[in-house]
Image (cartoon, rainbow, N blue to C red; front, top):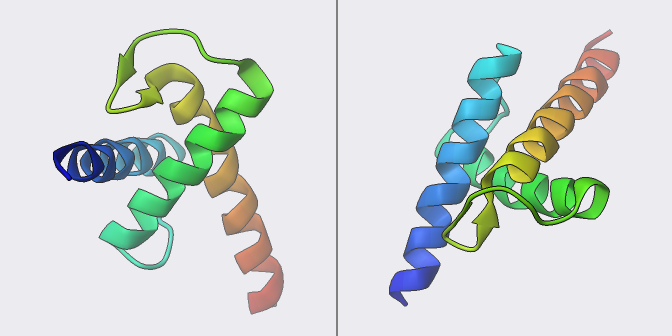
Amino acid sequence: MLSFIWSLIIGGIIGWIAGLIVSKDLPGGIIGNILAGFIGAWIGSSLFGQWGPEMGGFFIIPALIGAIILIIIVSFIMRMFRK
């Protein structure tokens, strides 16, 4: 149970940092950041492999890069639907 909570915290932090780097926010606040962290970790591990420091089951650098990619894609799609 504690490892699941730790994963949620690390996923949220990764999503939050990625949002700060890109200067965009995902809708959903904390839950959006957690989802961005989890999905970003999956994208980053798929594209770049598992390397770098690991914390809470996430390899930080690929997860952060994957979350940045995800936020850019989601913000682009949201901009398309607003027009």
